[in-house]
Length: 188
Ligand SMILES: Cc1cc2nc3c(=O)[nH]c(=O)nc-3n(C[C@H](O)[C@H](O)[C@H](O)COP(=O)(O)O)c2cc1C
Image 1 (cartoon, rainbow, N blue to C red):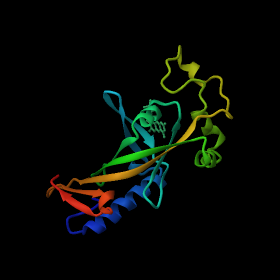
Image 2: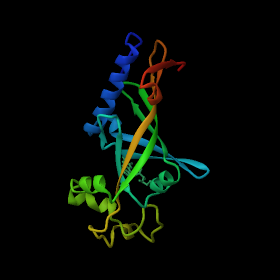
Image 3: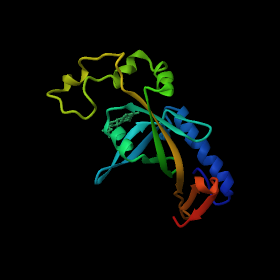
């Protein structure tokens, strides 16, 4: 359990933030992977990505390829959803966020330097992610490590909805940026 009803809303907020920071730092933490939802034309679209960093201001950072569908979705509509679930603690966190794409700017250049060579091919494919290819090998040809599409997605949360499952009754709290992150209990 991440929190119980004995804790104050402030204590719950601190516990939620702490767990999100752990997710970015610990590769085996269930929050190290996050489901990222975008508005994609008539359909919502969701995919798993790695949570690379959570900053002190609670900005979430994800790495991707500029040519991917998620980037074109976010260029059309910068609102995104993040979804986390911790099976042991039985806690779900759903976040509404505003995104910013960092491509070939200072932040992207700085972080690109820290990507080890053997991981760089993830952002240098000859074809855009999702392009149909004639066979499985086609995807690994024609790599040019200098000409990359490495992009940093920065996601700034607007609302954080936390659901704690409990045998004695579930608990749900909404934290909103426009209320200075003060929590509100919700019916689960
Ligand atoms: C465990 C896991 C981690 C992943 N991490 C990333 C990631 O950090 N960045 C990324 O762009 N895609 C990642 N992917 C691939 C995406 O889920 C997705 O298939 C891909 O980015 C194309 O998505 P799009 O077409 O919606 O843009 C990951 C997939 C899995 C299964």
